[in-house]
Length: 277
View (cartoon, rainbow, N blue to C red):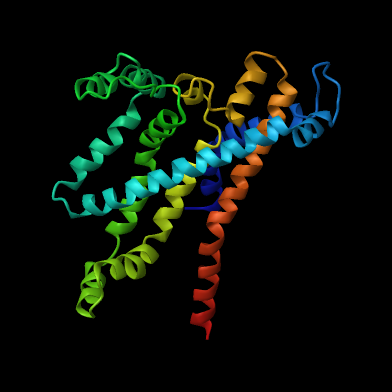
């Protein structure tokens, strides 16, 4: 295939990237430098970095995203290990992927029914004598639902990394006298680190900008940067401030990708240097 033909095939991908990635980001950056009167200003950034409210929202966004990511890792890694031992793996993978086909709004309303005052959870608590509790519109309900939604995106990369491991390596570890814990920490975890990093990126980055769940499940008790962006664009109509927060979120996402990808890059350099020697 000639170079000209290859370039022709690149055109649709480049158009997609320009129209749906580069152009929206450029518009957000451009809009962030204008105030409500459509005048060029740096006041939006000054307001953001000097306001304790926005800084607290940033901390909350990072904190909730971290909790959701840690929870998904703790649930997904054992689930991926168990899934790798099953016979009908493709069927179980399909069942894990299936919830992602359902609209996020529908899943949120389903959990409103489950966690509500007259929902199934409170009915069960009343049946065993505990009595109804305020579960909906709490930090717990928000983290629980967000973790449930993000779990498939964590399980799949971890499962793929585990499936690629040669079973002989695990058998050799046991033959050499390693315990299950030593095999997990010294063999499995290092070999599946790429999958964990990919899962962390797939979960942590979207979790930074959650706003629908904060409204429907958190009941405005959970205030994040995603909530602030929605408020500025749809309520106050301050698109400049909303775009400024969007730029901050984009920077945070790139920083998280750089941090999680740094170790892999260093290991690659070390491995290349060892081969040259």
